[in-house]
Image (cartoon, rainbow, N blue to C red):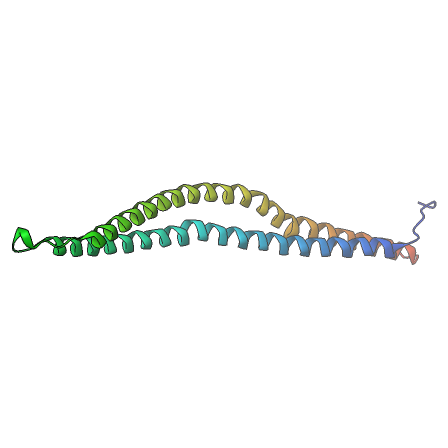
Length: 162
């Protein structure tokens, strides 16, 4: 140990501080990723499905109303008094088309929801590893480095490193 060369402990301390900053940034990034994953999951699993369920309900209600109006228009006391119900028939056809569209979109939203849940789950694993690295491994390394720097400073000052 008489040949030991302890010159610049400040650079080691700068390394320790950089490790601490890296740990903080990793924690912030992992928390941001986790929050984004939660928002994505909620958007596709809750919001989109609720939206299309509501659109289906509205289309069904409007279709029923249009069919009732068409039925009222077509029903008469005498067969010779029939009034053409062209607009009402077009309205029924429009609402049938809208209902089919909403049902198709609902099925698509359900498929996408399942796919997005799988993608989010696959991403949560590496995100958890990033969090562990930022919250545990890097701070532990920075603390160990601090202990070593303190010992080297004590050695440099001519004290017993203990």
